[in-house]
Length: 338
Image (tube, rainbow, N blue to C red; front, side, top):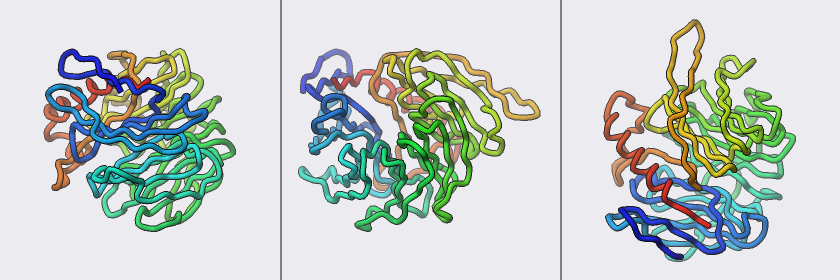
């Protein structure tokens, strides 16, 4: 690993590794987990990098190697040291950053690459959902050695799975079959099927301030927003990227901000202006675009006391939340895994 000095943030280069996902710790504001793969994930091994920011910049806190490419990472919502990754060998790995070796446990039931993993954010449940190229979604309790149930219905590879931050036991998935699907773990069945694009959908995310609003990003270079109460047509469509959209995320701090990253090597930050009509309608203004490699920012709660999420109290701490968001975004802009 090499570091380029300059300012308060350094650019990190990891030879032979290409970044697939980055997630900030929900407990430690300067800690970042990066899932990386060799040879763009086509072949070879993977590495989980745990990075810390201090006054001198970014430093490597710990790294873990795996025998196949790592495609996604998610932090535990009840333990500041624990996180889960997923890989090309069809397995999920449970890691503890307080230990130099690992993983603590390996869950292997998927028969093909696992491309997405997410830890539930609603209170009262500690569940992990994974999406695979075997066209299934699996539900896991990290304390149990096997999956709790398997969800079937997608007709192509699954690229993204994301829990609702509002509704317990509810998650969304997007797939190469061009659909967005909303699932309920209580029924183990699909609640809503949305033919969201006429192309593979690589990413989806839930708005942190509106339980009915989900955004999708697809190979057709477009972002579309969906009101789950009426999915006949999108409530917005945003164009601008010139290649497939790899990841889209709503801001955890502001209902009016989302970001997307693309294979055109840009991130586009979008500010939404809400116009109150008889039905929800959004006008979008492109605020910024920058070349970065990672794509996910989440709020944090100081350890060991869990603070309310920003979307639980949207009117409090607005300035502090925005300051943290910009600080973490600056870290991601200057992080380069090649």
